[in-house]
Image (cartoon, rainbow, N blue to C red; front, side, top):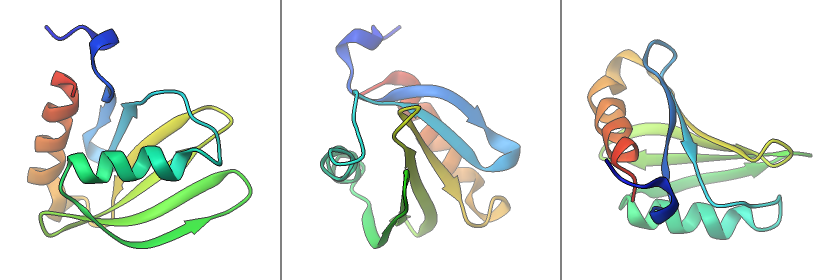
Length: 105
């Protein structure tokens, strides 16, 4: 088992039926999220296609191995999650990401 204190990113919850992976991250606020998110995207070798932000939520459209996902964050609760655009078509990639986050990195 990986000690969560030794990893930067980890799994909090995998909601497979909803196509959502809630992840553990270092602390962040609205202004520091882009740097944190870019570090995560780089580690995953993913690509960002679009970035949007509102009053308290960042939403990035990400491509991970051909799978379209939203990377979302809400800074008040310091919540970060991936959300599939097409849950059924993304099951293999979501399962892989959940297992990766489960191990922590």
